[in-house]
Length: 162
Image 1: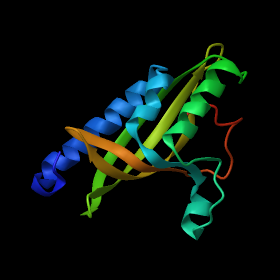
Image 2: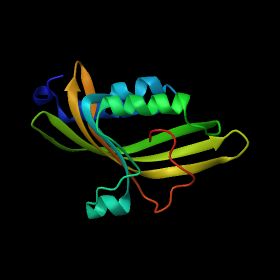
Image 3: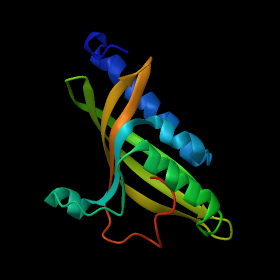
Image 4: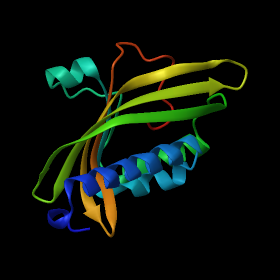
């Protein structure tokens, strides 16, 4: 994909398609595929809105490469203990906030619903994605994904990628 020759509308559609594929991958529990949505040298953060707004570096989750994301998947599959759950990501209000130097900046809202097997569905987390994307083949991948959650408290813990 040549970013300089893509219309704004087509670029937004490409971002929406990437976000939909990303959400579906996570919702279906295909965690081994998740790191493939990122560049080799990527940045993935789950950070509170308070820290984001203040420019503070502390994050609930920080990975600085695809290898770190793959390690997290391995830990989830082999080492971590957690109750079975189903997730549903709802992504909306996708906006292109900038295109420059081969990078697309985008922002969107997210809400994640979580259903534990013996419990009702609840809103687990809501916030915004602040993404930096680059062209890869015919599509886009994340160079940076900042998952900025709104609440000051996270229920239980963040087990899975957001």
